Figure 1 (spheres, rainbow, N blue to C red):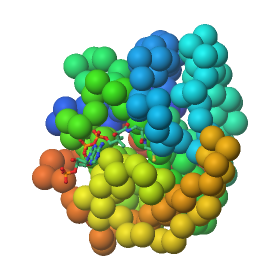
Figure 2: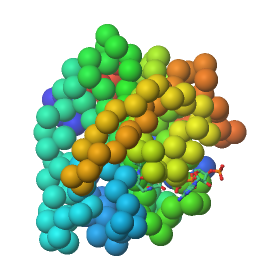
Figure 3: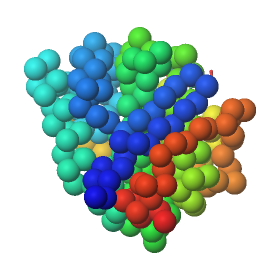
Length: 212
Ligand SMILES: CC(C)(COP(=O)(O)OP(=O)(O)OC[C@H]1O[C@@H](n2cnc3c(N)ncnc32)[C@H](O)[C@@H]1OP(=O)(O)O)[C@@H](O)C(=O)NCCC(=O)NCCS
């Protein structure tokens, strides 16, 4: 019998954090975390304003959003949403996605932390984990990201890790115009952390990710 969902064995470990692809128990914790707040209400760091939803919609929507991404995952088009845990509690999420990775060798990232867990270096640590996985273990040649001009936390996190600016996109955000800065990082420009990433359970996931 083949392993039907090898991603459940994948674990990334940094000095303070554990990152595992989403599971239902962890998603419930993530939804409650989102309910407690991700950013000040006046700000909107996300293109799709999912944090504006009414509490019951936000909780159910968080589960359904992730189930939808899991259900659509193929080697040609995937999103892996890592739940980020500190001291065994879910504190946020770090996503990695790719289209035609076997050919493009490019991935994109997205991430957020519950408000209570921000500004403690976790955002940098979890993004570094995603970058080390992509470059050192999957063989990516570029990682892409983006942030609105009014999101200094995300822009600074990217800058610290070595990303370069790669133009802009004009977006409609909460019904008004906003500028998103595109960011790109090649492995030679990565500002490597002082720690090593521990990766377990990746081999059985390679085919699913088009990264053989
Ligand atoms: C973006 C985010 C993941 C960063 O994580 P974090 O743990 O708060 O960031 P870190 O503590 O690792 O800090 C990274 C850098 O950003 C700076 N920074 C963090 N928050 C900041 C803020 N609100 N304003 C200005 N700089 C900020 C830090 O000082 C640090 O830079 P430094 O080392 O030069 O001092 C987190 O703030 C978050 O979840 N924000 C809300 C959701 C979001 O914006 N997601 C990204 C969408 S593109």
